[in-house]
Image (cartoon, rainbow, N blue to C red; front, top):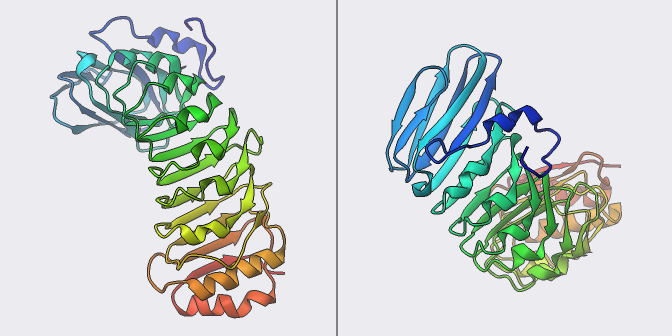
Length: 343
């Protein structure tokens, strides 16, 4: 393409979709096998959407979702035409997953007033370095994208609140810890690395999720988060993270734990918060069945009878035993959904 490698899922012929000038600031290919609907939500930019089928749509600066239903399958080159420097919000979605959009996002680098980038498309490609000057970003979601490069490029995004990164991104997670306003951290990539101790004391964090696909590149004691008491969601712990969950007794705002690490054994204690949310432990390797039983028994002591009230610990994970039968029966009697394997 233009001097750097992209995710191999991104086809090299997409180089012809590289943005050439500021009057056509963003182009991508929309490939559909049959009738589909494409939605593009924009704000800030005045201009035109060329849907690639001979039709266009005028756009104003108002935050609006523009939708196009294509009646037949085919390949369509979609273009946003206008002054990209005024764009403040972009979200692109389609109604059949994220594998139908192709192209290179580097034209967005001129959107210097952009506050939200939310493009969830596996084959939109490019290097994060192209976006390093988007320092007004508050929400950065290149989810499922072919974006590559070192997240060190994000070091000056001091207004950033939300980041979901995936696939080809690399670099040390301490860059994220350095962003003062970041509240939502979702990592779904095997290439990032670092120790979660860098997040200790970051009370602004409300959502913390890290899936490292079993690579053990993201490591550290989960207790590093023990003073991040505003966390509402702990999700997808990387398999290199370890430690005792007893500190959760301090997490009065916690509503969801979603852990699906395959290699991570949790030591748990009876010190659980008065809990009314959801525990999802999918495919979890508990330290032993005894630990899982103890966790369920403690949950029954502290559980509320309000909220979503779900506990899942299934898949290939450690089974519970009859020692937690009474606790399961009680949880179910107050409205909890309990799904576990049992010896």
